[in-house]
Length: 184
Image 1 (cartoon, rainbow, N blue to C red):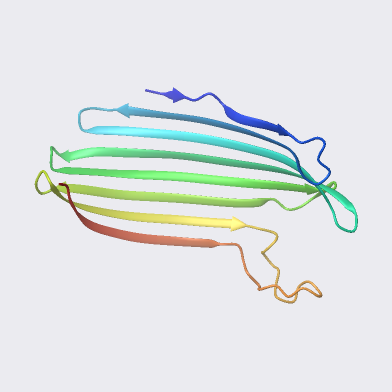
Image 2 (spheres, rainbow, N blue to C red; image 1 turned 180 degrees about the horizontal axis):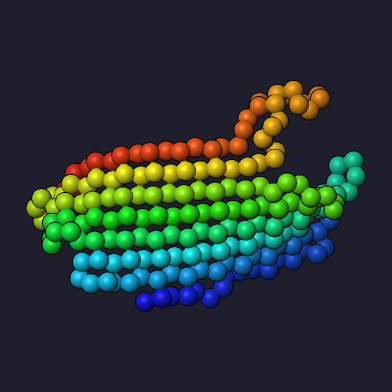
């Protein structure tokens, strides 16, 4: 049965602050649904979107201000099936997440900060007895990010600054898990 949650959020205002966070707003919208197809199979879905906006002030040589706008969207689906009654359950879960961060300092736009993550999990549980079961799982994850603060900045790119030449994280991971579960 579908479930929609009321938007959650906050609105903080620090208008008298001359330094640091001056205001912040957050809105979070979520929806999820589960569907039982029959006695053996079910599907679940979810979607979440979060938006965070904030402003801040500071000073060093000159006074400055910055505005941040971060958006995160996450969606997923899960499927579970009882292949052999009271013996074997199999399933799959997939999730996709994407985020974008926009930064403006004193009217200048920086390039957006971006991340993307995809996760797939396949699993099976076989019950040998009521208290003993075997569990197997395969997990794949892809992660990619773009960060102007790191990307393309070599150890000698900026004069008088020695950086480490670090790059934004990007990876693919495959994992396999096997376990025996004993319930007492």
